[in-house]
Image 1 (spheres, rainbow, N blue to C red):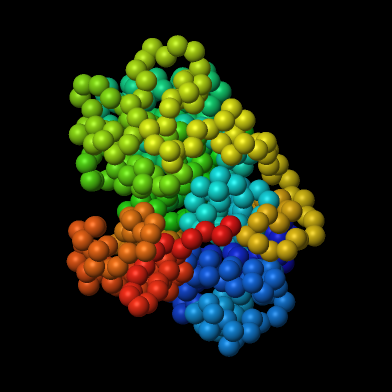
Image 2 (cartoon, helix red, strand yellow):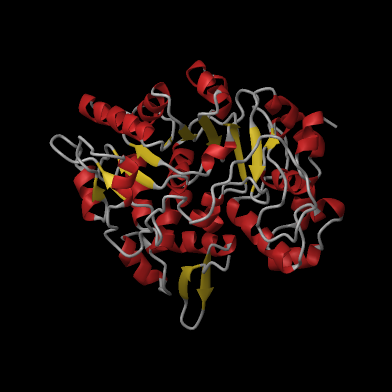
Length: 438
């Protein structure tokens, strides 16, 4: 057994086996890892049965019960759990780049992801750097990859203001606004959180990040395989994690109904308990910026800023009741936890998708060429569907509301029902997003 495997809890091993991809899976007939929806259904089943993920490693799950209630082939589960050797090899390779992994059952899993995203929180999170930086929040600064000079100058100014306010910059690490914001904060001696859609392995070794990682001023995380290549689906999918790990968001530049910045901002603006979303205003801003204001975003205060920009944003009145105003301690009112990279093991508590009292697991980078499977149009459309399904609604009414072909919508609804993210009732047939119980 690889030494670093000792740092993985039994629960984390089980979750990684169920949801992770390893190099040996390539060009083989290996079982397909569980999707987020499938893992959520399995987690519900474990909670009802008072089981933990680690229990699946001790004895095979009941085939009949699993198939009937979770709608996942038990043989597939067994096949995924039998990849221990492949996981050990992957962990050994990943550890050489200093990349750690934390699972939803671990104590150090970012509580912000669970509280803000609930069932959309990823089962597995890869990262490099101080995981404690994921707790305090900060200002998410996002925008176009091809930002103009004025937008870039504004980004740098805001990033430096964040440093002065002892507030981290949270962004996606992409070319353009994201990198300008993060690197400006780091150059000024501040802190940054990067949520990457691809290539975590390469970023972990990049010279521009090395010193800040060493000084515990930067953490880079990704819900995708550390060696994954860029694809649009993953880039769209990670936007919600940027907002979840921040207290506020600032849109530097957005195009109307185009690109990841617009998609991420509109998804957040439709969320019931959303982060306060601010937009750069003034002459020459892209047309998407004023359009976001019409959807409920707020204008970002014009410089020069008097005093602490964090307090300035916190004092801004939310435009709608659904926006939660962050406190000075933390967004959720609790004490901020500083997670050490050293591992500590304790006896696991009853599994309820809640922290197991353990440390994080250092793991490392994937081989070149390994990539996360591309997300489909369904994955991009799902947040829009869920936002429109707070109450029971027929497929015909939903199709009209979203201006989408009913046949296509019916296919999406069927899949969403199977994944357990929406509910269906008959007589008459109606749908709504699944009501959270945790």
